[in-house]
Image 1 (cartoon, helix red, strand yellow):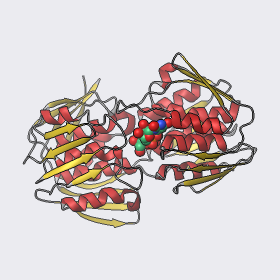
Image 2 (image 1 turned 180 degrees about the vertical axis):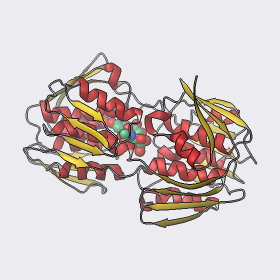
Image 3 (image 1 turned 45 degrees about the vertical axis):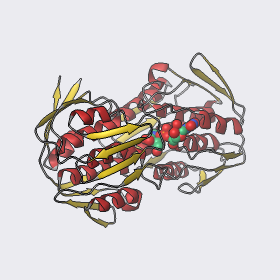
Length: 418
Ligand code: UD1
């Protein structure tokens, strides 16, 4: 298992380009099963979650190959509809395969999906949306068996704007008979990517990015070459890194409106933010002020996937902050690791109270989940002295060349094989 060795205290300067968004790319692997023709996901990075989706496609009989330009998928030979529990437990996005496999084969069988250990993460909303489209579902011994005739369009109302359930419903409705309306849909930008990709394949989907997605079923989809949009969470992570370490850094490849809630918080901290087209620059000097309150919300609210990084930032700000996690029940598991570095944080249920200390000190910490792991890296970059961040398997799921990119900004970080 690899680890990062970090010496804190370097200010960050320079420019970094965001990769294609992990959360945009993953559902597109599932969408690629909807056609016999080749699909190219241009720019998709070889992060571990994408490698795992590619492995799932291969298990179904499809081809998926990573090249320097992106991922080439060919599903003509896909013939299986069951995904082994070893793979489904690897990552939560395996659940997207349900909607796509039902469209293609009218049956699908997967084990309960895994992913980061950040809460209960049920899939009831996915399953009830599929039922509305005519799928019958049985659950036995940790497996979900789904079957349908031709899927039929329906009115679906989600009780909560779940990103995954919205996307799964889109994948199942795209070739259903008649029209589907998904009300209470999630509005995350990655859903717009899925809509654009499906439409590039010949689908008729509109409304993504609003709370109602409308889909007119088509009888056939064709191949497509598509570049997913930039990763707003990766971009946000680098912006917070520069704010925390001090310096001036620019992130390119993400439209600022997708990070409006974070940029507002960074301004509150006292950072200067400049935006132009798909470039965001942050300038940070001196000790920053705490955010009084950060509360995670569905888009366009503050993203839960930046909560841990924002908490790391507030650890050394002047004043106190309250961080409220509304999306996932146990997303403060990284806090004891920050405490090893001298952070003053009290967690009560979904709330974390952070009292800013002048500085953190280096320590040996373990990354237990993707974004919590990124937060530990940022804290170590700003801390006094040397740190090691152990177990990079979670960080590798969502960040491509994380150490290399931080190093280019001037950070003292090395990846070491242990
Ligand atoms: C997606 C993102 C993840 C992000 C999350 C919230 C991908 C691949 N992952 O995850 O990075 O943190 O959105 O922005 O896009 N819920 C239910 N029942 C369901 C589905 C969800 O109760 O059937 C609940 C969840 O437990 C959670 C909330 O709804 O409390 C939001 O989950 P959801 O939007 O579905 O997140 P994911 O799609 O899993």
